[in-house]
Image 1: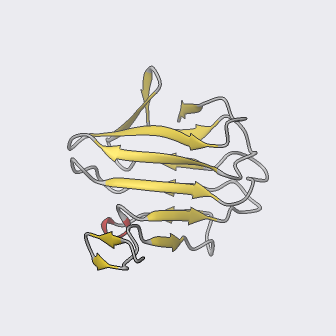
Image 2: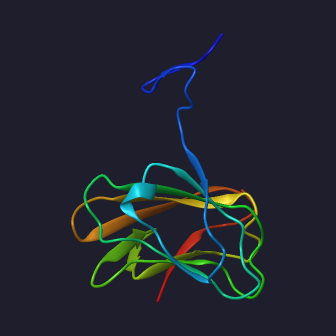
Length: 131
């Protein structure tokens, strides 16, 4: 029996989008919020930049491959910060380059701060704030 969602009978409940790996620096857009974003990784150090926070914006980023040289960095833009664990920082990373099947759930909690939480890959011990 088809699943009923807010989009109608049989519609998927979550859009999936594969992020472009044409560059090691990617900036997310508001059109990508509330989608399940899949990052296939890079051979070089990579960063994914969040837009300016607006309360309620939400991103799910799944790492679909391991990072090669350093963990993928999720960065805030401008003067905004990310609260993670017991600190705030301008960026967050997973604790290892073994990113396959791990990800970040990011939520803008007001107009100047993001909240980051890790999901998946239980062998990774944490999401860390960084510069």
